[in-house]
Length: 119
Image (cartoon, rainbow, N blue to C red):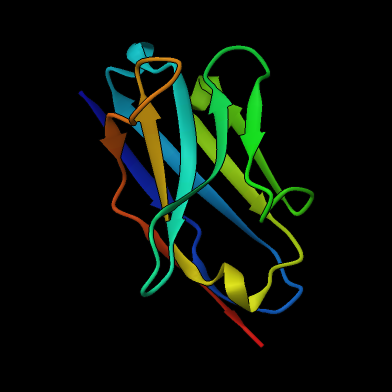
């Protein structure tokens, strides 16, 4: 079992920055991939970034490419999402997730953190 806890959300103006953190605990050696998702009101949950727990492979959705950066610190069992040039359409609840396989559905989810970008 892996437990995930996000932090770092908040209210920011358009063009501002935030850094989200996701701390993993429990059976962290089983993690293959971690990712960030977001869900805006009335919309489906969207996968926005992912990173292999070992190696350098990353993924970004087109909607955040060039503005968001995913990274990890294995020693701290922590994943980050640096969000720059934020837009009102980035407003959503952001979730971190982890999976034990290299592809497919995620096995573990955090509780989410709210990000609100004001215009």
